[in-house]
View 1 (cartoon, rainbow over the protein chains, first blue to last red):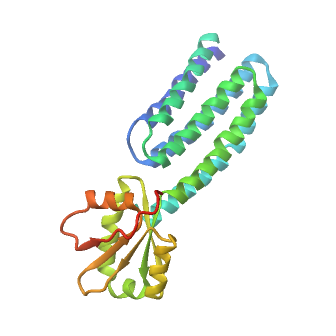
View 2: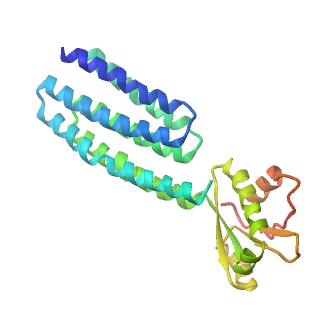
View 3: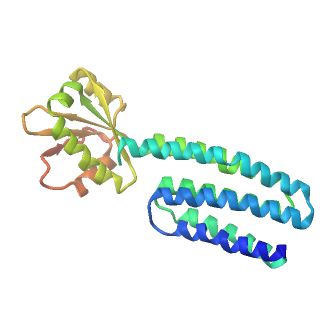
Length: 86
Length: 177
């Protein structure tokens, strides 16, 4: 059953990747980044449960909790750029 | 399990290709973050948990911050102007700024004002290359824009809309930027 869930997650993982190929607002790409970061961590956690591998699960949890700091900094920079005007 | 691993591994060169084809540097930064996430996932699935953790922390956090600082500080044209002119000719200078942002925005270059009090300070700033271009208003209707960056001069000469009353005086060509 977990294998089916994993395939579903991989399918969902492709959606934000497709979104990055489209030319749109840069905030849509930022959304895709946030989405990919969370989804990759969750896939790590799922695979760690499937393989009963605690080390990989730990990496997934740390990535999930710490990985958004750079995202916030990048968002702040983009917001400042939008304020100064393009 | 093996097939899904192959598919996830194939996403890594796909994400790298996405970074390469980006033309906007800020968008490329964001896609670099996506590449870091996918790389961390692939490393973890292939059994290298320590490499994955390093990639997640360094690849997506530190690299993005360093590149953001580099892009932010290099892709900016600093435009020197007198504070008096900015008060007196605010409307004209704002029109000039809008046109500059439109023209240079095609090259993903930002434009920002740097104000100076004295005419000599303004000229010295251009000579010292503290600003890339200066705007002076010696006549009531005309705005002179002077730049020392030849590439900037070329872009403006090629792209500038004809109705604008602006004259360019490339002072000297002192290397590229």
